[in-house]
Image (cartoon, rainbow, N blue to C red; front, side):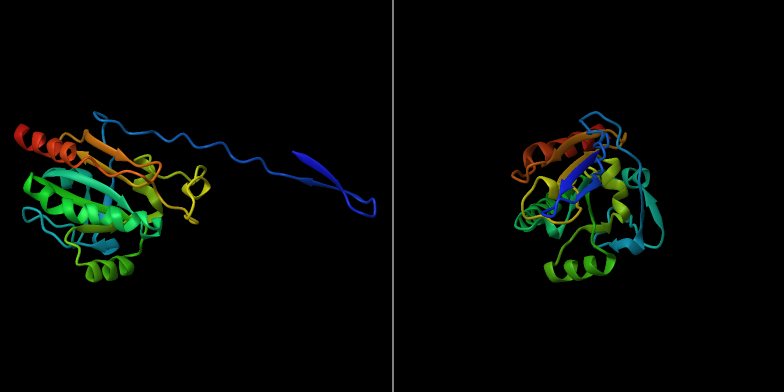
Length: 205
């Protein structure tokens, strides 16, 4: 698209404005959908818990590997969410032991580097696994990150590319059992429904 501008001396100049790329089609996951596969590397994060003797440490692990032990609660977190960030993290800290008690395992993915994760884990005494989601690969596949529809474009106070606050319960058959995606940054996971979905998968096993 071209625009012509005339300055105070009557000179006319033409500029071309690039049209904004159309929003990429982000597939929103729903209960019953098959969870996208992903792989983790121990050097990308901090393993603070060991589930039934299972650990991400020393090598790579896939979603399938994780689900062979326990139902997975997968959450995304970013300290750059402003005042929303500590609330979300506090909710995860509260949920972590309950998730374990109900037969699940909590994994949190963040855009922080492994060194930043280590500092945060020690400072806040977090007792769950946090891994760096390199290049937003997992978040993108779960529909909670979009380069062409960034959060900073619609949520005040956020000035960088981040993913949407979210949480997914993934059953042992790799199907989504519960979802929480907070597009407006104004909610919290339904703890009762979340724990219920974990327990139901434990009973099925």
